[in-house]
Amino acid sequence: MTTPRVFISAAHKSSGKTTISIGLCAALSSMGKNVSPFKKGPDYIDPIWLSHAAGKPCYNLDFYTSDSEEILDTLVRQSQGSDISIIEGNKGLYDGLDLDGSNSNAALAVLSKTPVILVIDSRGMTRGIAPLILGY
Image 1 (cartoon, rainbow, N blue to C red):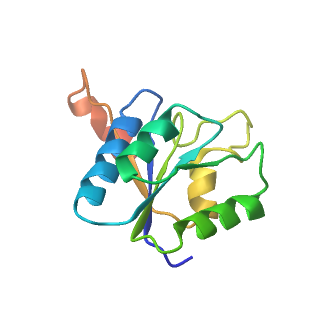
Image 2 (spheres, one colour):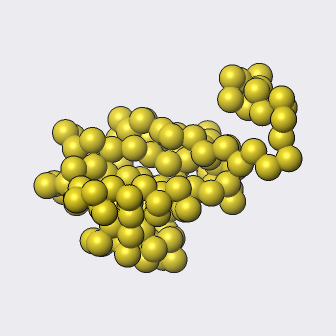
């Protein structure tokens, strides 16, 4: 896949992933960039907002309804002609129903070879954020 892309994830849910993703889609679109938005999982609300911000449809990338090949095919096909693709994750970077992490945001980022932007909700944090960013 040759289209530049980023994966927006977080350490935990409700960290601002959707706000950041919508903001990126809107900002890049307003600069004349052709943005292809994607949402991990079977979400239907966030894709509406992402579509509106990007000015084009948002596609779900879901390990439960698609196998890895279908996910990559959707990503490649729907990114064609775009300047950038933005994939918004769900929950935390390593969260998922499968205990081995095979359906996590991290798994999708690895599968699609997409760099991750980690959103950190720093409310109420001071130096305690260091191990979260640097690793324990």
